[in-house]
Length: 288
Image 1 (cartoon, rainbow, N blue to C red):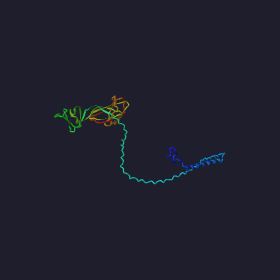
Image 2: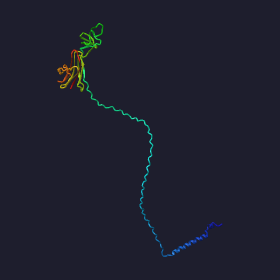
Image 3: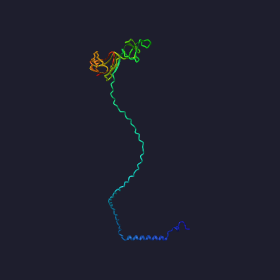
Image 4: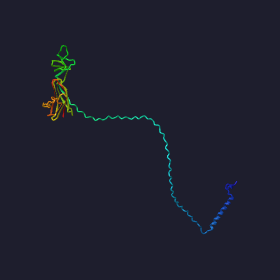
């Protein structure tokens, strides 16, 4: 065993390999020296050849041909099958109520004049008994033994008074007769004619049983025109506020109409006189 300070033989270089490396180094040194001896005075340095700068190559404009669009064939329409019609119930159409026709109101007719009876007095009657003759009694009642006379139908009697349903008569036989078995009316009547607004006419209508007089009073103004038209019976007399008769007796002359201008303001009287038999009358009076 060797001491620790010595190389191991295992790490020593190989003598053969070392000799070869040394020979190579010597040869390279000789060659370098020879090259240096050829031109001892100058060393030629060659300038590097500049590399050419490549020039831009012009790219020619190339027109790309536009392709003509190819016509796409239109597909033939496909027939859509028509669905079978579905039967529908008729729609209910709302009915609009027919508006009531608008009627133009007719002008209101003027109100009729009012004829107001002030007084009525019966002074005569005519017998009208379905079981004639009519009994005349001594007292206003039906009792045994009080019949004092009898009257035939159509006989006129003069009336003095009344009590309940009984007339007290003086002619032709004094006594009492039952009112409902006679025909009677107002022999003496007083009435007033009152014209309504926008009304200037009135109809005077009544009848007499026996003798009597009917008087109608109305107000009028001077200058107004009064017109009388008789539809039944005679015309009345027209008395001015001073009592003057204005018609000249037109009714007694059987004239159906009369018209005249009123002389003054005031109350005028239309009079229907009756003789013993009486009559019916109807006369229209108009003031304008």
